[in-house]
Length: 507
Image (cartoon, rainbow, N blue to C red; front, side, top):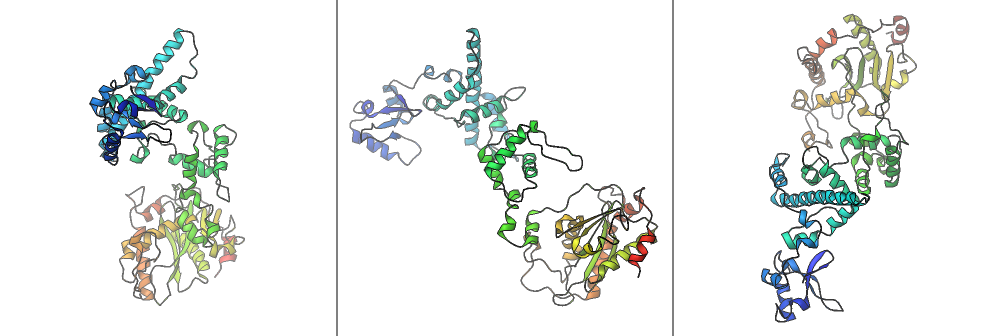
């Protein structure tokens, strides 16, 4: 009779020789013949040194199995009477598509077995609960018995049906799969068993929302957190001992009820992702701008509805050279709500260009009969010296935000990127690519681009600004950006404070 050895049904040397194999050598030769192929007789344990030769019962020829008493009966395991391949599961896995593709046959078979085993566990659980209730017993510990039964089922499955399940051996993870499988109003949740490697999102714990929480959890941390720190902080959040701010504007916090515990492997995987590499990047290199370019996304904010709410300004050098190593300097202002350029000045260098820009800005808005914008978004390089002058709140603008050494912290940066790689500039002769651009299509050839006359560069850039302003607005395509700017001015803007500005910006 076959017997269990490490959850596998096996036959011993004494049972096989000489009843079914003439000699031990004949048995060993046959084992060796099939050793490197997926079929045929297989040994589970070598003989010698006090150990017995054990052969996998399911790998033996049918005649030998019958001579040893046949396959183990269903009564040998409590789950076997409830196990049967599920027609519903088969229909689901054979028709289910992920990213437009059907599951391959081996995976269909494996998920079918797993689903059928869990369905058997559901039936056995109901039977045990009914029995215990009838005898006045406690229902505690039933899940532990199911996990143990499931773990010991594989040898019986192999002997009776020639298949094995791949459900987790750990009681904790078995319970998680069991709960997910049963967590559906009608029928079973077959999709919950599909592995993440197939692009399945049904059992994914670390969603984008979880990653956002983890990043916000350590938003103020100057160093990369350890696995222990992440685990303890996340546990404190789940128990309500730690609040994590989700939205600075509204004060909204993350709700612990929407999140589940995370395992050690999940946390380790999170720490290895690029979002966390930013914490240690400054210690690995001293190129801050390169680090910002690699890890910081372009500025993102809710677009205001009214023009005049926010103006973003920055310098720009169009990607053309009028002399070797010499580019034209532009300084531009863009209204964020309309996405229209409202001011631009240019020159051969940026010395003094910032004062010219603010003077021109005041001239433009006065000529158009408009009030100056409420808020300014600017870079620190050319503007920090005026924070206590005309850029103090209440002079030119009601509110001023100056970004220090953070190119991607300004809305204008994303606009400049669109212009740089748009056909209006990129297709022009003399356009100069960045040799280390992240996108291969934006990397330039080895040979130098030809020089472009200064006046030609200015003409191209001014034409690009004009075309940009006359293109359709993003949210109201019936209007151009410039028309949106003129027709959607904020009704609560204050008139220009000439008494405060004239002494500071006089020519």
